[in-house]
Image (cartoon, rainbow, N blue to C red):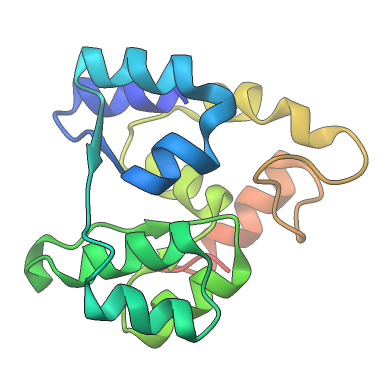
Length: 161
């Protein structure tokens, strides 16, 4: 988080997290999120639980964090909508059904490399933990090794899935 957030801060584009994601789904890294907020590299945004889009997404089975983020993005002007990133395949499908650009964590890494926010070596090092067998936090099901997955994903823009 800190590597990507620091790079985003240097480019003047903070990572946007919705309240539920920042305070509940990512509570295991709350100290990092708070530090990134204080540095200006992460911005936490709120959305009313009464928002009709949010309520509709919940009724369709989208989890709270994904529903909040999708509803928040949809409330923004279409020319200012950020990329929706999630490890939840159902939330990614829901975002795409709303015509939003959406991807998983590896797709975000591909975007960050393409934008020169991260170098390939920085990304490879940060994702080294995904080389361990079995699932990992944010590890996509199609991940084999960094270089192979990067090449494959680069060939499938803009959503990289």
